[in-house]
Length: 172
Image 1 (cartoon, rainbow, N blue to C red):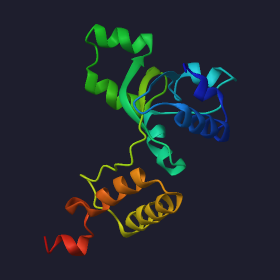
Image 2 (image 1 turned 180 degrees about the vertical axis):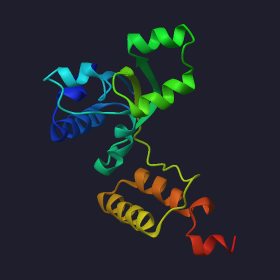
Image 3 (image 1 turned 30 degrees about the vertical axis):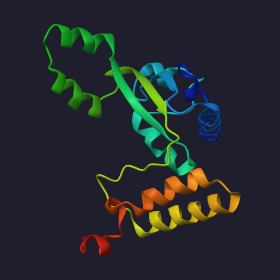
């Protein structure tokens, strides 16, 4: 996709990503090279209308689509690349400076993977009551449509001891 996402307005970008996710197979790879929003490459080109960072794609769950970042590489501005190569600065210096200054990171190369599985990562946070209710609502909708395969996956996920409500976990 190159830098196309940065050339779309936020609503158009959201719609495009929803369409791409919808037509893609599980595991499909999407490669992007986007300008860093604090670099002159982004600021000087009037065609760029959306500032994006790798973290932007983590917020797509709100649109009921999921892309996992497989790889994110930051391409330094030639000035900072030379300084790093000549050991005038360290990688840690670059990390600190890039949070404070413009024109440090020029490009971001991203490789995203389409995720359509209903499994939700819960190793870092327990299922909240709202999440459990949303999953139960989805379960009922799949049952009503006769989609037993999706219903079985959600039911298995909800019944997993790891996803027991917090008050029940204390009994396990």
